[in-house]
Length: 332
Image (cartoon, rainbow, N blue to C red):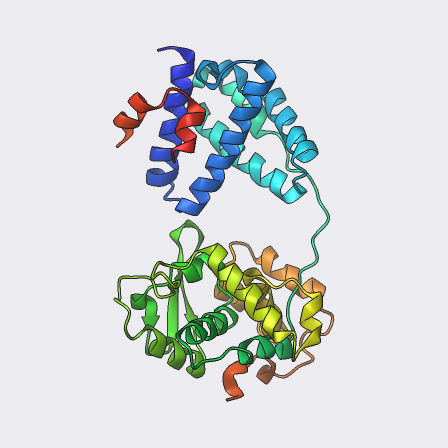
């Protein structure tokens, strides 16, 4: 087999067998890995002057990866966090190559040994209770869109769920006793998150006409909401709430802002970090402790600080069709 064909075969097996079948990674994660590998391959074509169809395994080494990382920082102006995410994806890919191409194991191992770049910790932005309340109360619940947005934002605040977890929520994920939802997070790990009575009631009411096996939150065309759609809803509703809560004008509010907000309000209410770790689905407790470090007033408020604000009223065919690794990655 030609070297270029071997490279394409390894890339295909990495994405279709290793990431999806063996690791069980979500489509979102697979897409992130695909972007990293594709950008690296495109960089190699520019540096070597070869077409993607002529790239071979010898081109994949630590020097090339280091040059690629420097290039995306300089030309694409990516943050250190994004640079590290690209590197993490490539290290996983090169780790897989070691199992498939043992003759080049040393070459691939040097890539895996490239360390992540240190960066200053980003300031975590979150909302005050009055700001969350202002956003929710600015929504007109008399319209179908208003009821959807009201339920969606209340659920984001109650659960602290990631935006993709909300996108994937189905009718069968709503449990009645005790009121809770089953959230599927990274690595297809599930967790059960309790709901306030008010949140549970509005969620059940909103989802009563939904098919249990289908997603709950839909757009105007009846299609499941995407991360971008929910981000647009949050931005629009926040802009409306500025009229009654001017402090929101100085904040960039995204779905992830509500995740940070839930964590901070739970901490300020005296909830233990280990509980919050399970609540939010953090892999490491260190991630949860980041919230402890940014708020010096934690535990000064009583538990009611964190009450619901709603109280206020085919592979073979692809091989024949695609002639190079970049074209194949674009098809994913």
